[in-house]
Image (tube, rainbow, N blue to C red; front, side, top):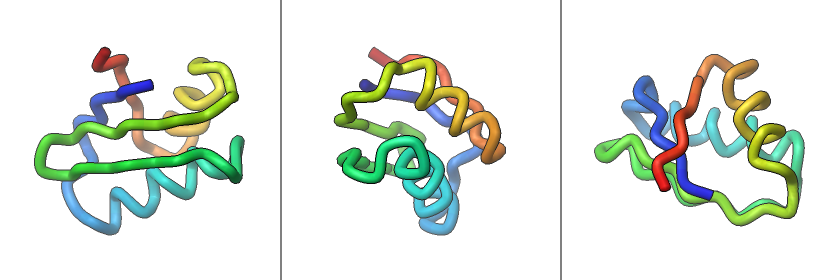
Length: 65
């Protein structure tokens, strides 16, 4: 999965994004790149679950496939 998160602008945001994703899948592999605002996620959880966790954490995401 690949997401664009418009308000992920720094390393602190990237940590928050990673924490939100890993709250629904502790084994998820997350690569966050604040300058491009892109997050790559490898997870067995449905995309909707990941998007919901991100939105709840204040990081609404759109699919960047």
